[in-house]
Image (cartoon, rainbow, N blue to C red; front, side, top):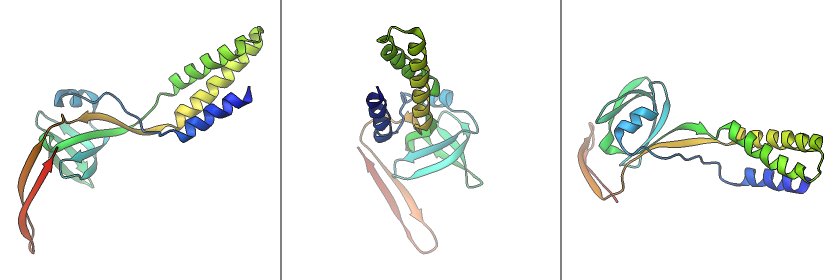
Length: 165
């Protein structure tokens, strides 16, 4: 009885804890999944990640508060947006309790079955509590694209070209 519990605990600790969700298909769905004040991580077409707090989402851009300044990012430049998130604790409790109830059912004693369900439910809840990560809320459609933009400061001038596929 202890061996299966240890196996499940070891598997939960070893398996990757990245969390994923169905990405939004359009910018309108992005607005439905995020609200002002959410911390997000934006991965753009130049392979840069920007961390900021959502200020506003419009049809063509995402405005973030980044290090005390508002920064507007065109949605055409965004490849992926993620936010902090994790697995719900309650589904871990439910899955653990169901597994424990099934294991305890073999004893034919309702008290043992209930105790086993409670114990496994607690373990399932702890596992899900520890599984924090990022949830994908928007992913740009796949395709080949290129972009050219001027680049420069006081000492360097040039053109930045990026190709994605």
